[in-house]
Image 1 (cartoon, rainbow, N blue to C red):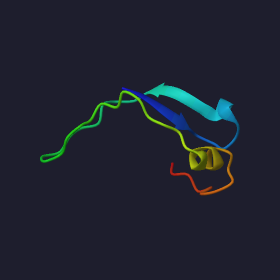
Image 2: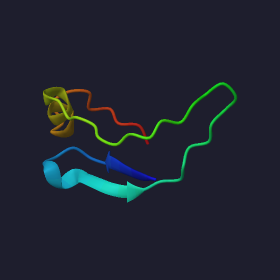
Image 3: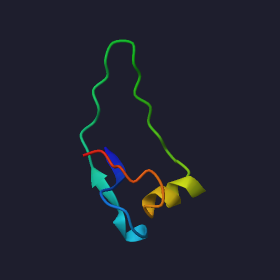
Length: 57
């Protein structure tokens, strides 16, 4: 599956389209296909490193 990720803070150039393995579903879970998703102002603040600067590895 394709995923949009950022591995560091910065401008729009830090956003990458990558291929990731399809997640496994556990019993009682569903896997939803997202056709479109929005980006809000807080997403851009986080990307620029102005909030929530701790990123998971």
